[in-house]
Amino acid sequence: MEEEFIEILSQYQGILHKVNLIYFKNDIDRQDNFQEIVFQLWRSFPNVKNKKSIGSWIYAISISTTISSLRKKSKNEIHDNLPEIKDLDNHFDKLINNDNLRWLIEAIQNLNEIDKSIMFLYLEDKSHEEISEIIGISKTNVGTKINRIKKFLRNKFNTHNHGDK
Amino acid sequence: METNELKNIWIEIDDILTPKTKNELKEILLSKTKRILSKFRWFLMTSILLCIGVITFLIIASLEIKNDILYLLNNAVLAIIIITLLLYYIKSYKKLHFNVRENYNVYVSLNNKVQFLSKELKNKLEITFIPFLGILLILSINVFYTSKSFIGTFQDEENLWGLIFGFLIGMLIAFYFAGKISKYQKKELRILQNYLNELESI
Image 1 (cartoon, helix red, strand yellow):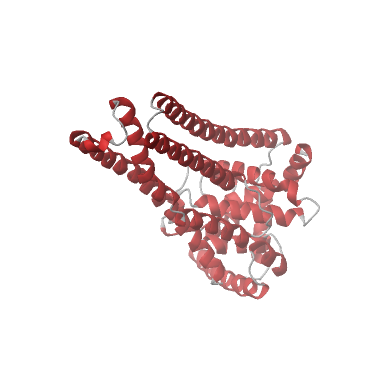
Image 2 (cartoon, rainbow over the protein chains, first blue to last red):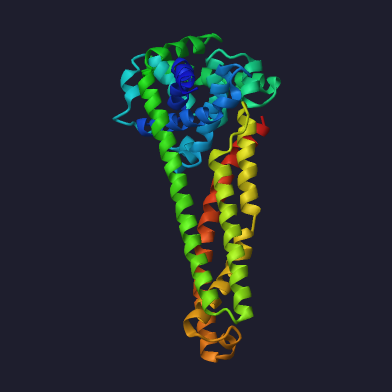
């Protein structure tokens, strides 16, 4: 079973990396959370295989584990209101050369925890129905929420681009 | 900005991710599982050893003063409370860290955690048992070391004041730590409840 789990994890690990990237701003927190998600996935693995799509299960566990572990990190409790701290040892910061991608990641990082997860799933090309199943809210509410976040991001993007000129 | 423009920007994220090898993933899984299990073993062993220590004392003391029925009754009730608390804490710890719920949805998962923490906070088991446990334990130790009868400890005024003073100090310490734990749990609950409210208000 362990081999099968590792095989699946290896295929879908991108989800874990991306969740960490939008929820945490430094590598240490990301590594801790990566381990925590792997452990939570492993715990529920015997009960979920062959029942639902593995992808949706990994998205749901990754998001709920991350949101739950944020409560243990008091600095994240109010981080929406804090100025962003640039971590010199940030692995991803060094790799992001694309200015628009860097902007998008930072914009998502500044959304609240629930909006982050909805927008993340939207960007991952999940349908409203899939997002509704993973998050546990109605399809209509998913649509409304996505439109609001998109409008917010669009305005920020325009300001960002306008500022560059 | 076109609707798909955000998605087009996002798609490039795959280029900056550094996938871990299967061996690295295996290593992460093993080390995390090992750490969680050793934490549980430490909690379990400490609680059991503490419990065995107190119960051994109660057995020795009861054998020593076997003619004092009230003292034997005191020690028996004390042993029952200690064993009940031990089982309760082990069950509660296992439920928090090892219980596997089959849910695929963020709302259900957060709701389960909120309900579990609320139940823990509402449960006044410790608050009910701490003073009772303290009185019984202090009486048991006092009778054993002063070689007075169970009733005799209440008749000696000096001894009685010592008992009351010791009991109050013990209670202050116990409630200080119980308060600390409860404050931490309340903070956790408040944060999770906020996330849940946010989901409900969408």
